[in-house]
Amino acid sequence: MAEIAAQPFDFTFLPDTIALVVIDMQRDFAEPGGFGASLGNDVSRVQAIVPTVKKLIEGFRTAGLPVIHTMECHKRDLSDLPPAKRNRGNPSIRIGDEGPMGRVLISGEPGTAILAELAPVAGEIVIEKPGKGAFYATPFGDELKKLGARQLVFAGVTTEVCVQTTMREANDRGYECLLAEDATESYFPEFKAVALAMIRAQGAIVGWTATTDQVLEGLRNA
Ligand code: TIU
Image (cartoon, rainbow, N blue to C red):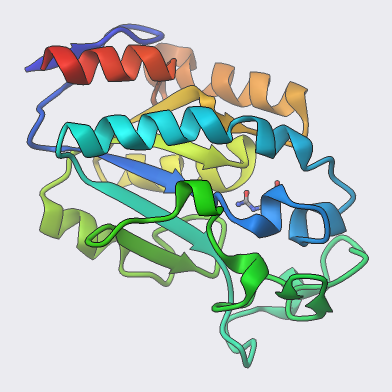
């Protein structure tokens, strides 16, 4: 057993059963002209965590541990996009519309791609997901079972939407979840702060939080 110094208390893991899950570090959430910006958000907050997410990914790769990437996106024919999602929020461009980086949040479009600095390498699992949570309507759960993963470290965006939804889904499926505090971001600083607090409240009711350096130190000592 190895440990990561974390809140609300140390996170215990087995090096054979831990994996990194990087949620939705896509151009559509980080660059002007994408989905995040179309909802009226300041995307520079997402850009700012890219070096930290990269450091975390490289730490897992160096340790020979699995890195899984998710992408929020939809089929070209929009058959997996409920009207309730497409019509939400009165955005300037809706999901599936043609934008400056191609069709917004559509599989295969330039804007849907993972940021070049964080691109998956050969052999890493990439999950395309139509929902906020990574388990819904995807092979994510089966892939985790194949890996034998039991503990998941999370990074990515946004903290209180796709990251927290996936952590809650993972909890209910028996995974122990840790969120890397400085490798996740929200468009709303107050939502990030409260999401971190609610995740680790009540004795880690949703999971643990730790800094990227604490996670990497835990991996090195394992
Ligand atoms: N809008 C927002 O905060 N998030 C999303 O729409 N998707 C993800 O969090 N990936």
